[in-house]
Amino acid sequence: MFDPFAKNLADVTDPSEWKPTKLPMLSQLESLQRCYICKEFLSAPVLTSCNHTFCSSCIRQHLMIKNTCPLCLSNQLESNLRRVVVLEEIVNCFKSLRPFLLDFLQPPSNDSVSSTSDRTEIRSVPKRKLPSPETSSLPDSDDVIIISEEDEPMKRTKLSADEAECPICNKKMEPEFLQNTHIDNCLNGHSDVLPKEKPGGGKKGISAFFKPRAKNNESNSAENALKINHSDFYFNSAEKHVVKEIRLAKLDFNSLSVPKLKEKLHAIGIPTTGSRHQLELRYNQYYILFNANLDSSHPVDVRVLRQRLSRWESSHVAFTNAGNGSIFGGRMSTRSITDKQFSVTEWQQAYHQDFKELTRRARANTQRNLNLKTRTTLESEDSNTHPKPSQGLEGYTPLDSNDVVKEDSEVETSGKKMAQAG
Amino acid sequence: MSHPFYKRILKEYRSLQKATLPGIELVSNNEELSEFEFEMVVLNNHQLYKEPVKLIVKLTDEYPVAPPKVKFLQEVGAYDIPMHPHVYSNGHICLNLLGNDWTPACSIESILLSLQSMLESNTKQERPPDDARYVRYAPAYASASGFVYHDDSV
Image (cartoon, rainbow over all chains, first blue to last red; front, side, top):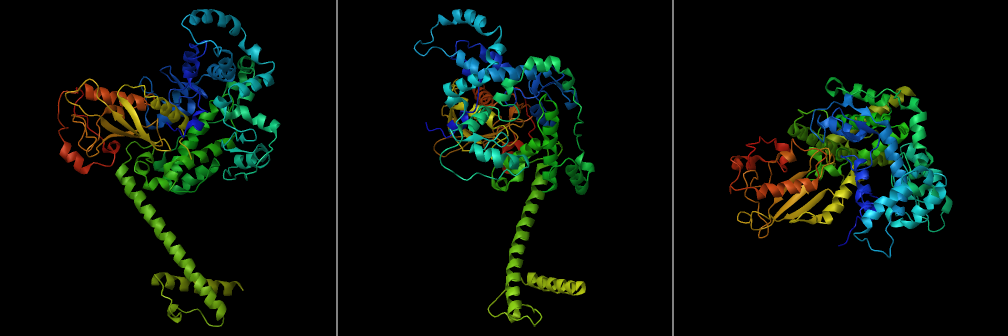
């Protein structure tokens, strides 16, 4: 079966990868470290009052729609979420060890996995591996990285030798371009800058620097994670575990006018364009991203958050025109997250008119530009005469006479203003 | 442009491809992995459901926080909407898992399984009591219609 997603699937890691290794039980250990909502390794894990753990951003997003625990359905409040600092370090530690463990535990290729092997491995492997997993891999991280690149290139990453992946937007490009131009643009929110296709010679050194990021390319690359001493971080930098920054507040949109809402958005440095509905969605998403970031022991820069916000927008139906036509998009998925009583049909109608209005305006604009063009050419031909309504133009019939009249009055008023200014 | 939970969807897709659920097969899906079509054979209720049925599953932008949209498909000469007190004649399904009781801990597979078992445990060959009225005013997908659950026994 042809699989167009094979390339993407290569980046996806899964607990089942332990199944064919010498220690299949590790899949349990890995499952436990994954978020039940996004199925990824827990990032900034938080504990609910029912003692279940999720990624901060995942559970916050869920609680916005429904205030229950996804696992046990008990009632939950966002304010009750508590960070689990040690778990974040455990997960990060396991994540960085994972490729090496996978590699070490590969069954010998000439030997098929037999039923007898199970018992012996469980006895022998802990002796060899578990006593000091960190010290065994930490000292020469460089060597180890090379192992991971060479031994499972198809699993880890699909980057070719002269391609690197941007840690912010995940686009693949030449390492030089990425380092010199793209990263700055990306951090400043101009994600559209794409490299020109250049064949041949990328620098191996630079590409190697970016390579290990392929798995979790957000804040903690595999390489950074290897350099961090997780236990040291937990035990000796305890003061860093306290959240000092102030969280974003939940907004009561019903009591805010659009200008007020825009003020709020501006104050936290996110775009203020778009319809009211989009403003609300954007605030809520940033609210999730921002507060979840505070739950991490390794928070990222606000610029990265903003970049993630814009990436989220580009994938969200409510912010793309494509969503209007799609059967299942638009209506349902763009409902106001905060308001449970929000009527879908009501919003549907409102949005429909919005869209119509926009089309109308766009048409009128094109028409106006067209008229303006004709008029200016007319003026330049005969600059002494005052511009007259269009009956002077032979063979020219305006599609919309109102537009032309408006056009005239506008030209006149602007002319007067000019005269006054002079 | 990709889904915020693209990786999770990829994982589910990979597992769906392996077709580990007996009687359920992924027939097709779109490029964005937001739309899946399944063929389902009801294994243990052969007297009511002799033919396989077809299902369409659509993931919204909020998936997995919000449930996917699921309905049965009718294709003339190939697939019929199964008779069930909770399945409307336009294919809409009144199932708590697809509405209020959805949690992100559920997955496409868990929906398929519960639909399969819903059909398997059925004994009544009938439509919901308000079928005619519902079908007349129904939106494209059931999720917006705000079901009143008739009973919990079936």
